Length: 300
Image (cartoon, rainbow, N blue to C red; front, side, top):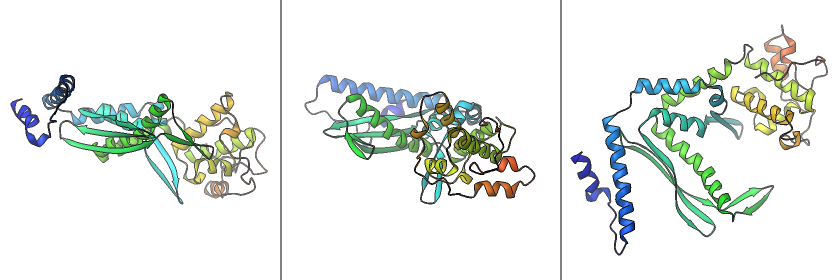
C-alpha cells in the first residue's frame, strides 16, 4: 500500500497544483485520487480469474437478446465491415472485471463539446484513451440541424462517445476473448433454428416480397451490401423490421426506398437454386414468378 501511495504522490504522476484554487477544488481532486488508489488496491487484492471470466462471457453470449445486438455491419465500398457492437463490448468489460471505463465530457463551448472515452485495466495498467470533439449539430433529411436543447446535446455526445468507448474496451481486452464472444453469439443465433442460414434468408426475402412488395434489391439497398453476404445478425435485423411493420410501429416506406428498380437482380436466388436443386422452394428468388401461393412466416 505504501508503494501505491508513493507512486501517486510522486511528481511523475502529474499531481495537479492549485494556484489560487479553492479548498473545494482541492478536496474534490483529493477525493478522486483516493478513489483511484482504492480501485487499484482492490484490483491487486482480488485479481481476475481468467477461466471464470471467459466462462461468464460465454454464458452471457448464450442469451439470444444479447446475441441479436452483439454485432454491427456496414458497407465500405464493395466490402462488408463487421465488428463487435458497444453492447457486446460493455458485456465483455463487465465480465472481464477490474476495468475502469466510461465517457467524460471535458469541456462544453459554443457549438461543440470536447469529450474523452477511456478504458483502464487496473491490474495490468493498460489504458486506452480517446479525446474527441462533438459538434452540436446533426444531419436530418439532407439538412444540418443545430442542437440547442441540453438533452439533445447530451445524447449526441453519448452516441458519438459510444463508438470511441467500444474501441477503447476492445483495445484493452485480448482479441482472442473478443473473437470467442462473437463466435458464441453466432452459435446462439444459429441454434434457434434447425434450417440452414441460406434457406432462412431466402424465406425472409420471399416473405417481404409477397407480404409488403419489398424486393431483394430494396432490402440490399437498406443494408448496403448484397444479400449473399447476410449473416445471422442481418437476419435478426430483418426480422425486427418485419415485426415493427407488422405491429404498426413503422411503415414499409420508413425502411425501404420504393424508387429502387424492382426488375434488377443480384443473382442470389439463382445461386440458391444451383447450390440446392433438390429443394428449389428454399432458394426461390423473392421476385420470381413461380413462387408458391403460401409461404411460411419469416424464420427467426
